[in-house]
Amino acid sequence: MTEHTFRVRSYQRAFHEAWAQGKADRLIEIAHRRWGKDEVALNVTRTKAIARPASYWHCLPLYEQGRKALWTAVNPHTGKRRIDEAFPPEIVASRDEQAMFLRLVNGSTWQIIGSDRYDSLVGAGVAGVVFSEWALANPSSWGYIRPMVEENGGWAAFITTPRGNNHAKSMLDMAKGNPRWFAEVSSVHDTGALTQEQLDESLKEYQALYGIDFGLAMFEQEYLCSFSGAMVGAYWGAEVNRAERDGRIGDYPIDPLHPVHTAWDLGKAVNNPIWCFQVIAGKPRIVDFYQPESDDLADWVKWLDDQGYHGIDYVPHDIIVTEWGNKRTRLETLQSAGRKPKRLPMVSVADGLQAGRVTINAAEFRDTPRVQAGMDGLRNYRRDWDDERKTFRETPVKDWAEHIGSAFRYLGLAWKEVVPVKPKEKPPEQLVYQLMPDGRVVGNMDVRAAVEAMKRRKGRR
Image (cartoon, rainbow, N blue to C red; front, side, top):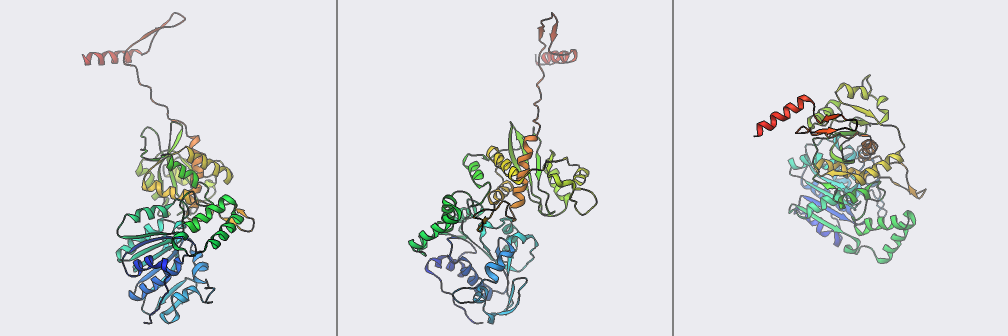
């Protein structure tokens, strides 16, 4: 097979060698804009696919992003499609334009996929996967794909620019201390890829587009690889970071004296994250998070019942309208399954966002992997920038985090409705009489309780 060369820039060399030469089978590269992350990934994947016939995936946050960013993208310097430069026609046996799929002459396949559709993937022979713009991808996609890659002794590479202190930062921190991983942060100061004049011009452009503060934050994320602050456009990123700084994410156990309530977002059947919470001493405590893996309501109810979560299920107002493939409303379906659903009033998205913000600022979060998965969604729940209007859009981005954020909006509306649990009064241990203003003498026990108290006293003698 024809050998293809790729010119590696000096600042790409460590990442390229670790990957291409098999020094690491797990890699994460946090790099500034225009570093060439996808270019390196495409070329290394080609080399790996030629050396080992297998299936290879290139995953973007959203499936349709792959068509514009990679499949149809043209290199302005050569006029050629990017995938044709990485996979020249002489090594491609066939291609499917609709599915963004290549079959190479040696039997290997390469395909663009999206983290928004990860649960529909089937690929027993997957030997390598690239997660591009990992900070924006659904982190559950790696959990789903990982067993396939592990089974085949394959590799995984994560490339991204920072998007706040989210799952990409957590993975980087983990990888730095793991000998199996290659981990690197390449800011523009590390690489020297751009001149100071180019950087100054970029900062001016960002601040002209986004304003002084947001523009600086975007510039620092894109070029300086800064994880500080929240993801630009995130609704609650700053509040989640504050909860972490305040020590409100920690060992908060489930209090058996208080019921565990739930808050649902009832979208399409498979996209129904459920937040589980208690209200203790007038404050919300987030104790669990459930992301259904099936569209079977019975599975969800069983999971909640198995955990012992039998409080009120707070659900959206439209639960009586939408149905799950039968003639019963969702409200009736939940009631028949032994749950206690309660409809929340219809409020604007803006009011729900404010309720969620207030809730995060007041809440305690139980530090478990499931709750952390939900909090990743809260950090990524965001709105896009509208270049034409020069402002953020009014509606959330419809990605993997949207339903997680929507469910938390309902939690924000629900927890203040919870009726506090009245503590049981401890019965008196001995009979005491009290003279009332009207001359009556009243005891603090009835006759039966007084006799039982006397027996207990005699038993202790």
